[in-house]
Length: 428
Image 1 (cartoon, helix red, strand yellow):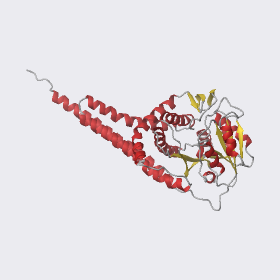
Image 2 (cartoon, rainbow, N blue to C red):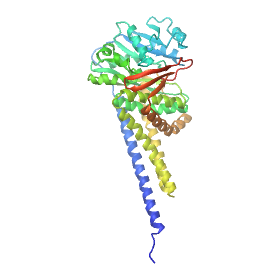
Image 3 (cartoon, rainbow, N blue to C red):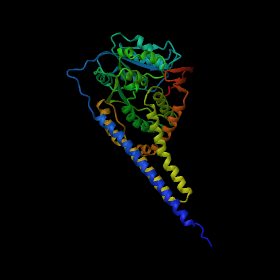
Image 4 (cartoon, rainbow, N blue to C red):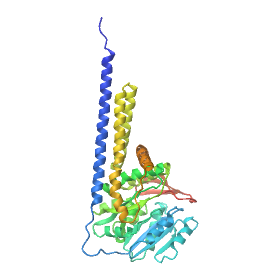
């Protein structure tokens, strides 16, 4: 009788295929980690560079600081106090509140009491083709004293170090520099899950933002004359944000943004998981609308998703095929990858801590409980990042601080609804 193909042959083939798939996934994870390591090392190298000081004392032109306020941020009084206490010889602060009936109105008035270089304004015009933040900025620009040569942006939750304006001014000494590039660093004292996700996402984001020159408002300063020469006013009249929208006009003029490694602002606010998701999605929407390297940002997020999903799929297929060895190899490789990826935060934290201490800010306090939750948040961060990237890519409408905007294009947005905010504003 003719012999039939025996099960041992098929078993050996399946075993070999599952093993090969598991090995391939392991190599992919190793390559992905090496890529992340290279990015982190590049950021660390840049963060160690000290800018070359020009001969003589750098000039300290008068600063105009604009702070849009909508709703009562818990840290608003501290944020205002941090600006008023700047170690800078000449500046003025303009706080533009959503209206006299906003809950922040009396808080701002109390915080500014006795400050001769600060003014409180009510937002007078809610422009339909830009965000209320940009409406506030454009109004403040009209009220700045003509002597203000530099422009800085302060959010209602930005508690700035005392040397914030000095560092911003030093970054603009070079005439070829259109603006500065600093960033925030999250140091949540409690470590809620949403806070840990935002903290880990931001640790990766600062690397990409430095590499691709993606500005953050609190680390961005501009010369007032460049607002006109770069054509920023008409851009802000049609934009949702004041920071990333600067990139294309600056590049078109052959100008650049200067990375300031020491310009880090500690943020200690806690946030829940849904809030962290909305926050990350908003940041990605700004990049999608205004930054030429958005495809790179999106590819970075999708590559992380594939890196997380591939070993899980191989492990599930191996279990279904009765190959526990291949499944264990895939899960083991994924676990090692996540542990190694989380470990990259350690040298970054070590590089950041001296900058924070130098500017009088307290670094993160690590405990065994915080560290264990931080490690467990690593896969959750990647899932949230992926979901936020998908939402940002598909978003045709966005709600920010109780205001909903429709998105038709980078400079084609419309204010859809403006519900009066009665509580704490969503973290900006």
